[in-house]
Image 1 (cartoon, rainbow, N blue to C red):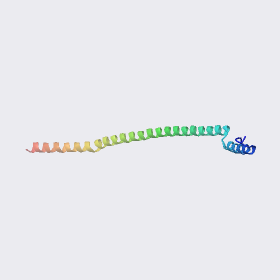
Image 2: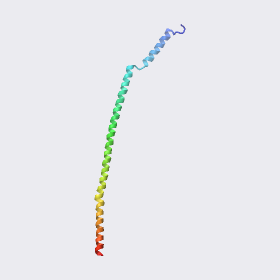
Image 3: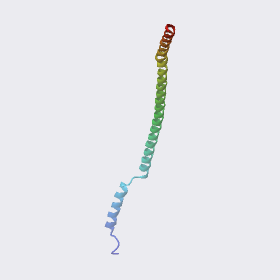
Image 4: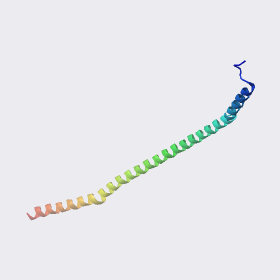
Length: 107
């Protein structure tokens, strides 16, 4: 009987165990916390999906703007050719023809 704990010692051990059990999270609280965490993850996933869609739409818009700018540049080159270079070449050809006719007729 000397190895067995006394009634007072058992009572103190029970009080200690009761205090430790009170500190443990109960199952209902744990499940509620898990549900809350799951809802948060679902919200984050939705936000990420919205962000991906928005990003994809923005990328398409930027590509469309770049294509439009490239088309405008091509159009500007054509306009410069028809408005500037072609008339200058025709005037130069006219001058060359006049010089040739003058040289041929005067000679």
